[in-house]
Image 1: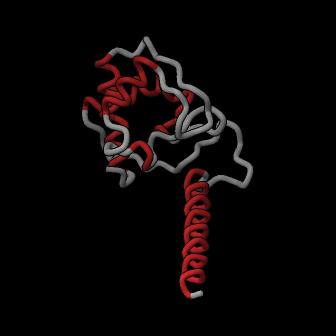
Image 2: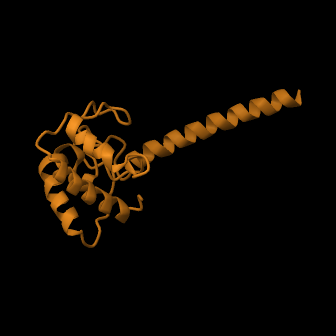
Amino acid sequence: MKNTLLAGAAVIAVALGTYTYTRLTDHDLSAGQASTPTQGAAMVAVTLPKSLSPEASMGKRAFDAVCADCHGANAAGKVGFGPPLIHKIYEPSHHGDMAFQMAAQNGVRAHHWKFGDMPPQPQVTRADAGSIIAYIREVQRANGIN
């Protein structure tokens, strides 16, 4: 009887933990947004660093020219278009620099978000991608993503 009660309590605890995690994650993704986010609105609040390195400054210009249409200004994401890159999902230990290089070169199948697949960006050279990555990483660090 005690084992059955203990097992039932464990199942309930796991279910509550999963529900809470899911709700917190959904909340994190829509921080600062109304219950019905506006199409094209930023998905996360982004704090910019006080200054950017020269490489990251070049990366910001390239990002603004190629990536911001979908990933939003300052990589904050864009509701209905593309995910925020200033998000814990894109921390270096989960999506390393090579993942960004490959995304620009080959595109990406949707796997974390429901925006659809990202097409390849053939106009982004390997050097451009390196500068864009430097920009993203500096902004991530300014937002506590290491």
